[in-house]
Length: 82
Image (cartoon, rainbow, N blue to C red; front, side):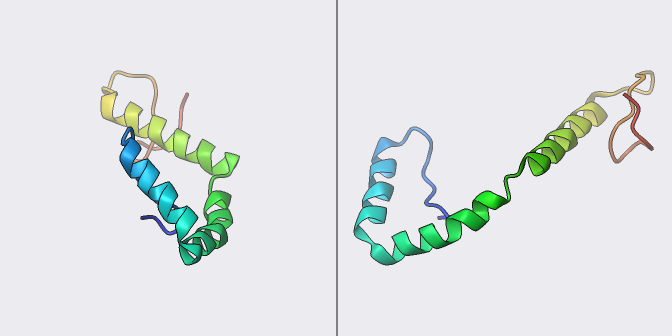
């Protein structure tokens, strides 16, 4: 269980049904999820998503780059050259 969600294994229909049943039948759980949800969702801004995507690309380039590659990105190399 996350702070603002109930987590279930992808594709597990029984777990999904159980989680929905819990939300429908447990008023305190439902209230907590409704209270915590908007704050959690606020963390997923376009800016934060773009930054996370750029970090992932930089790490992938750093892992796969050789010294002869013209692209320098990320923490192991200085600067960003595209």
